[in-house]
Image 1 (cartoon, rainbow, N blue to C red):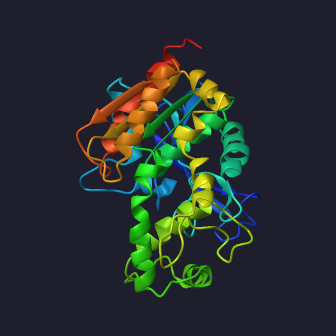
Image 2: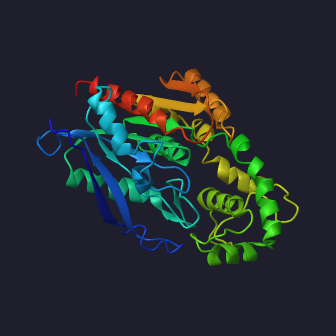
Image 3: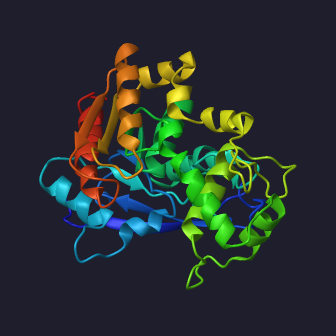
Length: 341
């Protein structure tokens, strides 16, 4: 076996993203990790679709760092140590002008689920020597996307790993509402029209950023994903009123329909996870977004439903936890290669 892995950065023309309402690029650069030995063999390999978190895209996982490994370095080490069998990794790009798509279809951002399922996966299967063993994994918003897509597409994916994924929206998102309202006040945003203008005019790479920029963009992004409304000036509804912050229960119900905890109440989604060869969840016990509470609830519910899974808590927070991929990639490898398929 060759000692050299390879990363090929594919440029994919997405027809489903071409008409996206934010004018985001429909040409997407998608890194593909090919394990050592791929070029010298005729073997077929399982594929792991690895989703980045909010404000990230697949190419970010190749960034050189003095104190962390790129995903290529990580996989090379795990394979060399015999902890992980050779697999292909695909690093999709679900980035939007607002920071991310949650890997969902939305009239406010574009058809990112369709891009993943209907365009990217067939592209990879046609271009590379893949097996009918696909996992989907990710961290934070990527963990959310991985879990939701596994629940929605058990015919496509047979394993899922969710690291610190967004869930239990009542706990992880609602504390952000007052932060967004304060940032609105500082930037003169007091209506859907002024929010629309702010979102239309900011430059993503401008410096310095406006005060409270991330608080504004985060709530806009999540609203665009969870409560799109083509009739709104922004293209989406906020779950609270401007100025007073009064809660809007009818909009919040739209958000909750996308919460993995709510989705798990639907038998078809529960059955989808039951079909998985692996359901892996983890979270830091000091997660800054309180996502460990959602993970605990989700794990408890899986247990009540007799759905086999692994849940691990580790000592840490939400950031700088890419080392946890060591655990999930090994678990995926074990699930795939222990099947003797």
